[in-house]
Image (cartoon, rainbow over all chains, first blue to last red; front, side, top):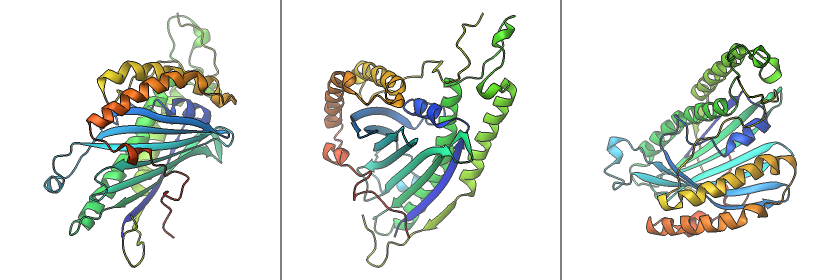
Length: 224
Length: 95
C-alpha cells in the first residue's frame, strides 16, 4: 500500500522566465521550512543539464508522531533534475534520505509551457507517500498526504513570489513618463498585478481540487 | 529617475536572496559557485552553449566542504549519490 497524489499549478510566466528563476526559488516567505540548499553534482548530458542537490528541511510531525520518530527535527532531501531547454521541460525528482521506513515521500514535478498559452508555464506534480511502520502505516500515510497537499499550494505561492520579485512590474517614478508601467506584452502594471493575484488564487484552488487516491501496489504489499 | 532597463522583461532585474548552505563554513564557497553557475545557466546554457567547465573548479572546492559537513551530520552519502530520476529506481504512476 501507499498513497499517490497529483496536482497541477499554473505560473503566469513564460517557460524561459521561469527557468531563469528556477535555481533561486528558495528562500521565499512560503518555504521557511527549507533550511539549506547545496549543489552536489552537475553535468551536461546531451542537450540536458542534470543536477543533484541536497536540501535540508524542518521535519514537521504531528504530536502523536513525535513518540515514534525519536526527535529528528531535520530531514535531508535529494533533488535531482533535468533541464531540457530545447523542448522547454524542467523535471525535478525529490526524495527524503533516512527515515524512509517511517515515511518515504517522493515528488516529481514537470514544468512545461502551457500548450494553450506560451506566456504561462504549468507544473505537473506527482507524489508517492509510503510508510512501513507496523501499526502506524495508515495514519502516517494520511498525515503525509495531507501535509503534502498543503505544501503544494505553498510551493506554488513561493515560486510565484520569487518570480514576482525577479520580474517586478515596472512602477512609475518621478516625471519620467517613458518608463511608466509597460511590462510584458505591453500590459499595464495594474493588469499584471491582477493577473499575478489570480494566478496565486488559481494555484490555491487547484491544490484544493486535486485528487488523492490510494494506490495499491498489489498483493505482497509495499514495493519500497 | 529609473535607469533604463529595456522592456524585454527577460532580464534578471533584482539580485535573488541567498539560501544558506548546510554548514556556515561552506557559505562563501556556495555563493562563489552559485554566482558562476547562475550566470552560465542564463547567459549560456539556455541560449544553447553546453560547456559547463567554467564553474568546475568552484564546484569542486564547494562540494568538498559540503561532503565534510554531511559526514559530521551523519547523512548517508551513498544514499544521496544514488540516481533515481530516469533510472529503474524512479517511481511510476499507479496503473
